[in-house]
Length: 217
Ligand code: ADP
Ligand code: ZN
Image (cartoon, rainbow, N blue to C red):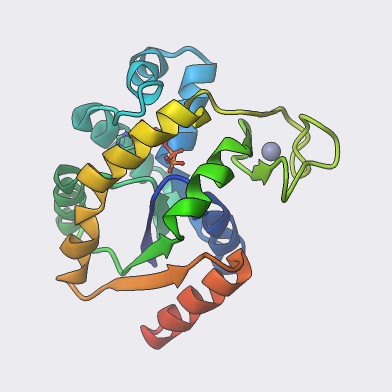
């Protein structure tokens, strides 16, 4: 099964990804996590990507696409995967279709995680993430047991540089302009599933999994 997760920054896309990964035992590929790991290690890719990420802008398509192409060629992707944070532009989506077509494959479903706009800022500003396993927390609603330490893997949990209010605003604008059009792009193919995440991640997961079951997954 090849899935894409779409959703605005702060929609709970990351939490949803963790649940899908666990329930469907599917390889989870988060472009944001890969960029953050590269920034932490100060690789050439990380140093370049950071310039854009800190502005709330997108990393250029060429860099992002080649990184994803490389990741998808690894063994753990052979039986499917969950793409989280990719594609984020129409150009990336078209390129992904092209890559998949080469092996006679395609995306099975696109899960669109939605949440009311007013919830987003609060969630993102209070968010903390694990740089190692990608688990996310919220200082108000879901704190770590030990401050600054990931409950799952014991590594460091931080406030992302791009989770500052000014940057979140820029990221939301970037999302509206570049990524929202993808919903229509995939709706035209009839593969969009809605997951309303305004109540709880469990509720959003139930909604998505029921739709996936109808599609035979
Ligand atoms: P969120 O979904 O919370 O905005 P992510 O962790 O998915 O955050 O991504 C963080 C940042 O990494 C984005 O704001 C963007 O700068 C960069 N990024 C991630 N994925 C892509 C992509 N597919 N194309 C371009 N830039 C990306
Ligand atoms: Zn962790």
